[in-house]
Length: 68
Image 1 (cartoon, rainbow, N blue to C red):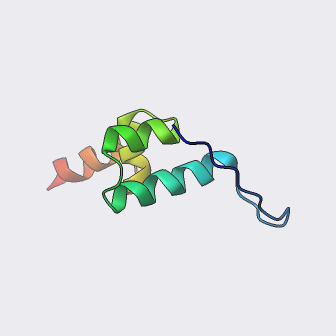
Image 2 (cartoon, one colour):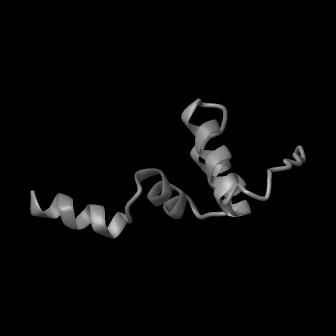
């Protein structure tokens, strides 16, 4: 695995986790990482990564789908 160091200005209010999620999401969206690889990079389970991608929890989505 490669190591990447990123220096951001102090004025950028973003957590390390948010940066990892953004990178993992972009690499997944462009097909460079599989779902499993992207979730691993973000330090999340596949279900949590999917929830992060969708912007809502799977439980919330299930309730919405059940209503229809």
